[in-house]
Image (cartoon, rainbow over all chains, first blue to last red; front, side, top):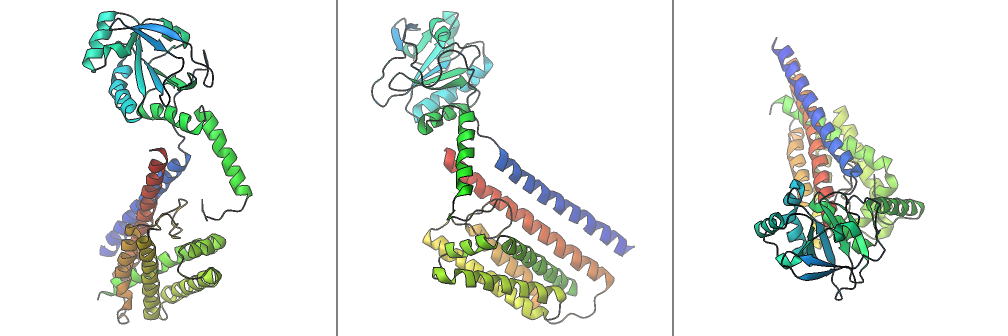
Length: 210
Length: 178
């Protein structure tokens, strides 16, 4: 009897160990296959690489603010389209603020609708009222359909990247787009595939087993 | 020492070295490249050194697996593990942590880390029961325990190796996108 129960125990432990190993391997496979995240480009309105529309807009502080056009050298402008009624916007706003600070971006919030609600939102999240544009012109010019939407504009006034953003990774992808010169995730994946093909064709010094 | 411990340690050693051997033989050219990357001998010795390691590992599998010269096999296995640990430590001290460890544990490239050195030392500890005097006859229960323990420890060793490789892969990915 003892032998049978001992045998059964070992069998169970063995199966558990196999399951653990299989799980760890599966995570490895996922790791290899996981695609990088990127802001979802909508394919309407002015596209990356084109000049951003130049608009003079009104802010919540009732001052004029120029969106688009040439910026001081080394500056990147991040337009972040939000609404007080959009829960994802509220979740992402503190992240966008912190992100703009670490990346030294000129963050401009753009909203459309009730002044009081927007002002309350700005106060709650500690946004400078003179950096919060209110009005529909900017959103219309960039063909913004869904929120939260972000547009990154270079110092030359050219759109670097834009799209629907839901997470910090999406925002980061826009900076990566600026650094790599690749405008979308699709373009990045294509680029990576070309690089891999070129690599497997030539001699590799560094050994790599996949 | 309980003979089931010796049996477990012998089975573990055989499986660990057989798996390592299979990986090295399957990716022979890469294995030569990895040996060269360790930069412990002039480049011209890389291939002979790589072949020597493979031969010694095959010898370990034969001796431990067949159980003919178990103690010699165990001693050889422990020597090899210590040499690998020293080779990794030397490169860790040189700061060359980016090279592949050559563990062939998973599809992922595995960078050198202190964890790998510790892993080798733990394996030495696990193989040490095989160095003991020849065991008396085993009861059926002892056979069962020895085989079960040896196989389970091997599988767990592979699983933890995989998790370690994952950790370093995640680290590389983080560094690339940070």
